[in-house]
Image (tube, rainbow, N blue to C red; front, top):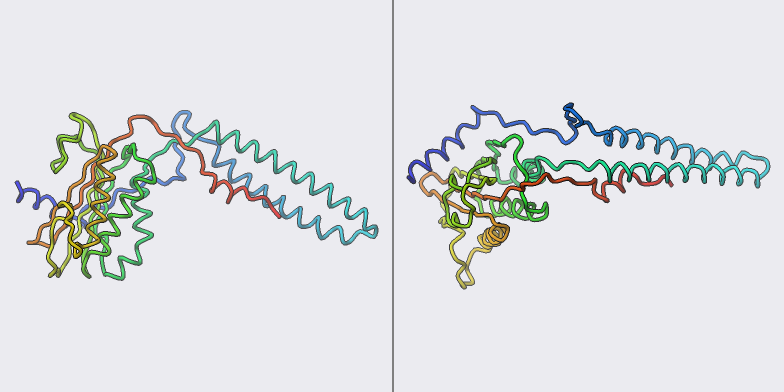
Length: 290
């Protein structure tokens, strides 16, 4: 059984040139299906342009008042124009909030998108250690997980931090996301998974070309010795977080071919999840002109 597992891992890792990466749907793509087109993106762009024009008008009004022979009339002109601009901005803000509350965005593709973002953020660090992303095989329309974005971010960032700081120079990484049944996953903690239930699996394979370091399973119980590798402690925390959220995690080290595997299984969110544009993003877009 072990030989079969190793063969399947090698096939996945070495077939990077044969299978191109599954394209990820862009967040800005708009489905043309029945009742699926949201006017929010169009309104957002329109309002951004209107605000830019209003800001320019306000600036022009400020300088134009200096050209009035009657200073009081110039100040009155600027005050009237500014007040009218602020009223227009308030109406736009109110209309936007109304649309935002009544047209929530369906949350989709969170795991694949977050993986891409993390890999982009850590690209320079991977390059410094000459570690290449050999293959990314992401399942299209991957379901959402019941974990929060913060929990998911902690899990994925911590795993890649572990790989970065505990790996030698030169190597490659393969990443796989897919939906699986609970009976398809084998590993410690399988009894924690509900029978006949679908889960999301995230598999990260790392292969190192010339590793002379002694490898061990980082998910063995933590001893109380001071010399314990602190990086292994990261995976202990990740595993605890996954298990607290009704998931499971396993690692496998193959010393023969220098290949390490980390598999994380997360529960699927059965309900449709909707979200509003975060306040921080709204503030960037809707910042009032000075």
